[in-house]
Image 1 (tube, rainbow, N blue to C red):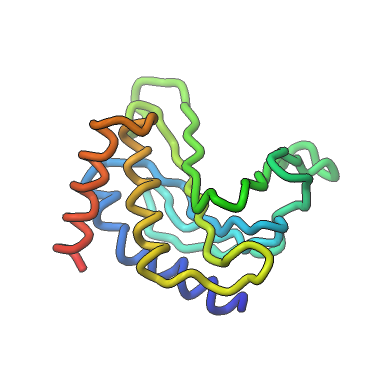
Image 2 (image 1 turned 90 degrees about the horizontal axis):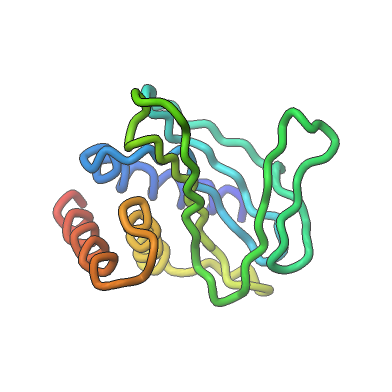
Length: 163
């Protein structure tokens, strides 16, 4: 199962990398989120590099809808969110200061649910790719409004052409 999850995230990376690059977004990572906090973490986007790094076993177990922070090494404070079962992904946006930062200082970490809660059966690739389109739209528009859905449709169109 871990190998299949890694393969899905590599495919997502390769299929969406062109869209992310063309739109000038600064997507730092794509990770698997899991209902029990044991998702595989795959960081692969670097603004100035095409490196793909696979880092597993970095998530923490937490109670539902809470954030836990690795406390063993405070200098490496990484948080893992456990989301409700009906959430198929989320885009964690952070901002960096300074004028010469890409995407106006926005940095995005995208988290995708690859497996169904509790059973851990994988969603279809089409469902996962659709969630990725949705989360990428959040790189440009935060709330789910008309502009958001317009951007999401543009991304879906680009994905169909690039694929």
